[in-house]
Image (cartoon, rainbow, N blue to C red; front, top):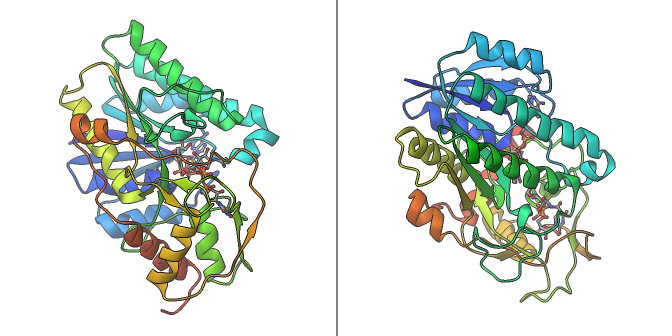
Length: 342
Ligand code: NAD
Ligand code: UD1
């Protein structure tokens, strides 16, 4: 069994990916510092898979500890690197935290890849690198625009660091996956998204409003040049996204990659407006959601959704789950963690 290091593996996307890996032929070792997750996630992963992953509580900013970890784990075949800070607003308030946590940790990990000849590396990038697209759907060749936040900048810089390393180390193989908007939870409701404090993202805000924790959803803008005036995004089920990581990893492990750095959009290819998400949620849960229209949120792009042809044809991956599946799993998860009876 190949041993895969999943950094940030107790977080939202990492935990769903750990499940998919454990359900295939992989042994999983998770590193997480619990800065944005809880240890209970480990139990959720184990309940689903009946195979407990190995876990090390470790802060990847501690270079000496990272070195020590790799000295103790010389049999790692690949790394999926999720660990990072991801709140856009917080990154504006505290840019150095973001550059340290998202860029330094990447460098330390890549140094260990070099030192221990670990050739396979998958990186969590984001559609945020595209900024406001010139045309839609957006392909991987679209220009990278000036980042709108330090968070977005860390993703751009990280992709550049990986590209620079791959350019001079042909033995290194990396895939950067540019995620669109992940939503949903595992159908078992054993794991899901756990935002700390007031959620900034749409779906957790919707489910918390339905659960009575928030009074109403503020829809940021109804005067955009879109069919119903609200912004359009590409919402992808987190389980589909997790599966893309397993396929990307298998591609690297079997040497099927066409170059030593490949980049793929991971989305559904479908754009949905904020109001479409609201109405789909109401339909799935059969309840009215309290919402009001407010002004535009600074920094929001109008419309972005993925061209998924490269992921479909080259990676051999396609999103399979519907928006309704995703929203109903998010709601099931929210009800479970709030002890709401069905
Ligand atoms: P998350 O916050 O749920 O998970 C990240 C995990 O990493 C957390 O469990 C956190 O405790 C851990 N972590 C953070 N810093 C660490 C450190 N220094 N050492 C060890 N562990 C550390 O986030 P997520 O939504 O699962 O996102 C995973 C990755 O995907 C991130 O890199 C994020 O930027 C990227 N991404 C996320 C989205 C999204 O909408 N969720 C979209 C695009 C890209
Ligand atoms: C945000 C981040 C982006 C990150 C992505 C995935 C910003 C500017 N961008 O993107 O960098 O990659 O999350 O984590 O924060 N909305 C409301 N009301 C709300 C919350 C959201 O109307 O209470 C709207 C937003 O205006 C947007 C859509 O819902 O149109 C989705 O918002 P969100 O979930 O925050 O994701 P993004 O803005 O796409």
